[in-house]
Length: 237
Image (cartoon, rainbow, N blue to C red):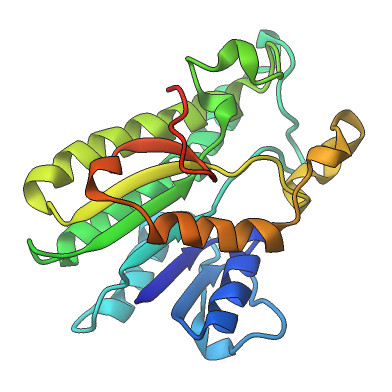
């Protein structure tokens, strides 16, 4: 079983270390090569754009595709933008950048895989989402009226995953699509907000990685198109 991991942040790196420890075949595509891992299993993915994804998938021209693709790419803030707390703070630029980072990679992966997969391909495409993007879970996710761009882009990711799963039922019935809410993790993404968070809820990515891999390994075709937590329980859209 071969794995392709997108994103070399906290969880992407933890997944690579876990896969290496399990003796699995893997490739990590991200902005930095993780320390202590085989550098030949790393692909520099510096930008989230069509050319970068096309370059990545040239590695699979004439070669076997991975059977599991995990997208950990995500964006909550950067040096120039913090999550919006009021509607007046929403800008088309930041909303667009959030959609490109949080929703578009899943569709880009789906497109690249669709061009290369045979009709009988067996593969899982998993993207990390967030209960913050759930419409049904809006009242229970504890974030109130804030983080417009992040939450809207995660909702868009979930919808894109459902549409792709429905498309693949006819085109690639052995391939499945899910989004997973892993919960809060102690990663650089959360660093600016630690003072606002209950630190007992922050999970170590090295603990999340094996649980995510085990979840994917146990999926059934009927679960394609689902939004799940790490226990495999369905979450509200």
